[in-house]
Amino acid sequence: MVGYWSYQPKDMGSTPTGSTRVPKTMFEKISNWYRFYKKQILFILIIFLVSSTSFALGYLANREFNHAPIVIEKCSGAASSTTL
Image (tube, rainbow, N blue to C red; front, side, top):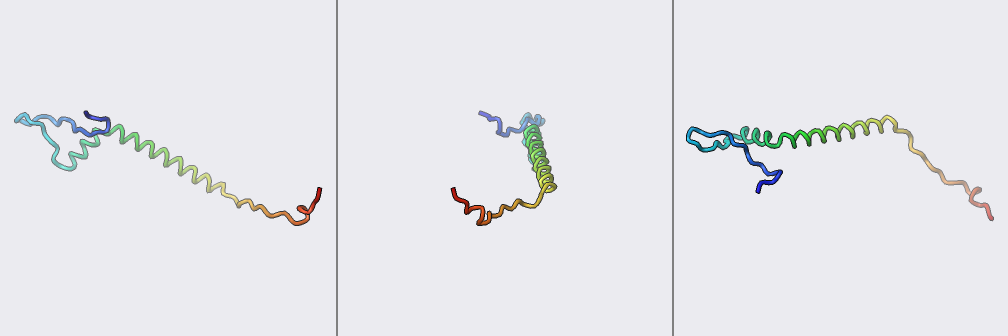
């Protein structure tokens, strides 16, 4: 059974003897792999670019609005000495 993610190279045509041609060089193997997974590769690249862009824009926006931190000081003793 061939699953969705399993790689099966496409038929490269027949040789004069009738046997199927098997890719021999690394370039042919990579080329066949790319042709087989072209849609998935482009989909992953688009998701990566969108997420990287949104992270970069969020990072730049945060740098622009970076203000001094809010400091909370303890109250003086006079305010806490009230009795009921």
